[in-house]
Length: 274
Image (cartoon, rainbow, N blue to C red; front, side, top):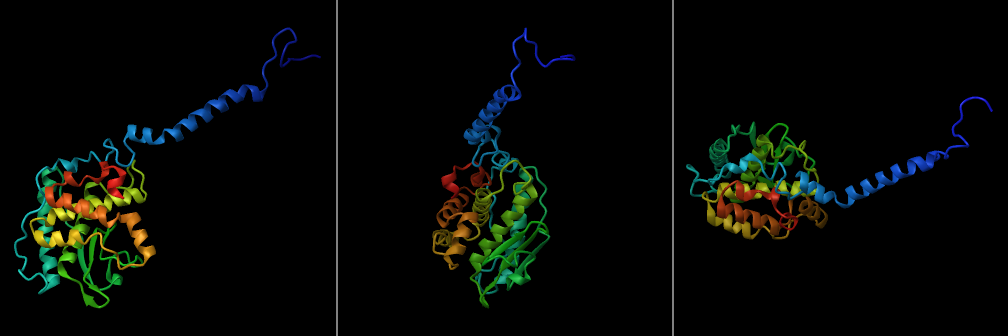
């Protein structure tokens, strides 16, 4: 036979394609299996695991504002319920001043929400029209705070609306400081959402701790009460916002310590943000 040969009868035969590639395939399989098995350890190492103290959200520079956020809110009426909407407007101004001072200490420029809407129905809100049974919602794209002031055609109690307003303001702070940035390395899922929402509960309590502490106590103690939503809706809410018990615990942290650092849900173990 003329021409070049693939192998020589006087030399060892070269292994076939399968024999040559099998070690590579096995090595890749071992690496992939190792990545799957140790993925949580690897995410912890590089700082993308939920609750990792090394993650970008857990080490955010916002937590450098060590002094309490809250302060008394001048101009609030003694009777909060006399004109609930006027009370909320006054509180919104106070929240702007609180967060402006707190963010300045952490090296951030504060920008107020583009708009604060006090709406009678979800259809009047800037977003969330199709979402179920919300009391307030923050539209991150337009940076609009929405608070529902009526439910079933009846006016809601004022202090729960004040807490809702403070909670949505906390979402605004998360947005403008980059904490709510979904393009970061942390995985955006229900666990991420719970940490975001429970942090907002904590920050809301921090801002209201000196505004009306006794009513805040009452609201915190009732946080674990049964929802008026259906069972299915309640489960969806817990998955995305956390349980009432978790909410109450984070509210207590914000109320007791009053600092942004005390509300760092991003480095908390999973059982504290369930």
